[in-house]
Image (cartoon, rainbow over all chains, first blue to last red; front, side, top):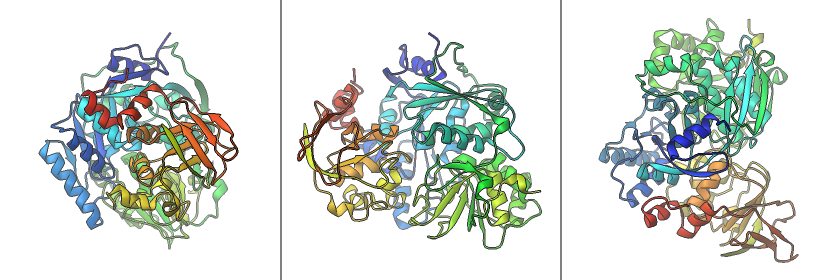
Length: 418
Length: 168
């Protein structure tokens, strides 16, 4: 019987014949935590007498969820992280470096075939690099760092074949929202999603990161993509060499298979308060918005900022709309400066905040008020997600739709902007 | 092990995410689980923390614990006194983390369980019983891996005890 990418990676890391449903103890290549999850991981590691990670490529800690620090309480967490990382020579990405799920792949620590675990649910993002990466709790990540291993239930896989070509102003985020709506919020729980098809092969890496990032919104554990020329080029620019791409066997067994036609896809929006509550952007025309947010580990990459800038060039956001932009990393911000994207965004009225999570998780940098509507490129729209504000409505959409909506002051299908 | 307590149900019933269990605004502010426990469920059930008694049971529908990976969610529930959660299904990260911190989860049909009912759970057999009506349901057996973790008091105690993994 053939194997999926997931089964092959778990087999090679556990020295066993990993088949869906079995439980294996597998070696882990890299692990990470961020400022919302590090405190508990540090406590566990200290109680274990941890001297340094046993994972093959080490570990990192990232300050991104509250960055720069917005309060005295959080300052204590950041100080504890710096102290712990310094005492064990653990790389720490400090204030301004960016979102963990961008800076870690950028740092060249993730290669095809790797197993990566992170104390952040969107760790599945690195699946875009043909890896098995997943988010776990702090105790699990502490265990992985301390032993270099972790137990995994080998997930069954769902195949999503996307053929055809995405239309103009329809992007990877629309495909990700469409997938989430099709699978539902728990349709891929304990499963791995493996995408394939022409639309995936022609998609740039930024788009693949967006889709892998959203896999957890359907409950998925892993989302390993194919490794092709685009992957190799992206990795080689970050100095990653010497890896062995993992390919699914032709007779690999998938529990379910979906066929999507990229050409039929239109701009989508996830309505409050669930990510699978998806409709066509055009059906929400007239819904006024007060804040538009472009950024996050889903859509804060150069391709995302550029796509928004294409719509915003020479225009200004509607009066009464706050457009907040958080580039996913310092490197992306620098590239966006050099390419003129930052200038376009600023002239359109955007507020650019520090590279990092921005207001996505409601800790700082643009907390909306009760009664307001937000259109955002983030991955979650749960009640209260953006702060202590249960009466905020968050609509999730692509960078194109967010830009078009910011210009219109209401939710707008980006294909309607000239 | 036997768990006995009163049932707490919520609206929504399905997809109770970790933001609802403990809001992100507290996880960065409060480090002490006992303090954090004062805020569990407050976005969907204000006052829950003062109502819940040691050993009480949360009963829910599908996909309990979805969303953010924050381990504060199962930890804060446990610190608030919640003895177990019974739901139709769980999100993956929450499921692992709950057993990792010693909070037992049972998976079974739950529509029959009423808010406020007195529930008795036998973890060894997975039997969930409504004490007043006498109705009993057998939950999906807790996998052996999870039983070992629970018996050792969680993942980190397990690793300390066995100097690594001993799950086979």
